[in-house]
Length: 122
Image 1 (cartoon, rainbow, N blue to C red):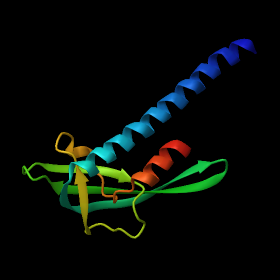
Image 2 (spheres, one colour):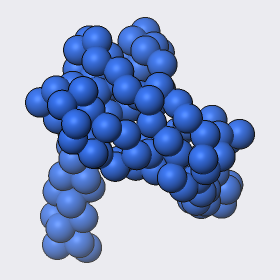
Image 3 (spheres, one colour):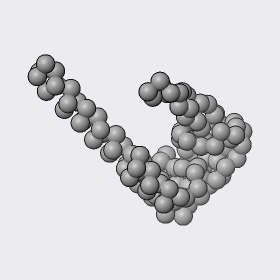
C-alpha cells in the first residue's frame, strides 16, 4: 500500500502543477493579445461542443475555430474554447492578437478581473 501511495501522490501533484501552469500560461497569452492593441476581423470556420463528465455531471465546452489575416498579411487559424454558444460557422468576429504570437489570439473581449478570478479560484 505504501508503494501505491508513493507512486500516486507524486503523479497527482505533478498533474496539479501542470494544470496550474497551463491555466496561468493561457491567461498570460490572452492578456498579451488584449494589451497589444492589435485586432483583426476573423471568420468562424467551425463551431462544435464537447462534453466532459466531472463527478457524473456532464459539462459542455463550446469550441470555435477561427481564420484571420494579420496586419502583415499572414493568414492564421486558431482554436479557442469557451466562446458563446450562439456563434456559428461563417460569422465574423473581432479577434485580439499579439504580433509575436498571432496563433495565440483570442476572440473573447477583455475581462482582466474575471480572467484573474478564474486563475485564482479555478
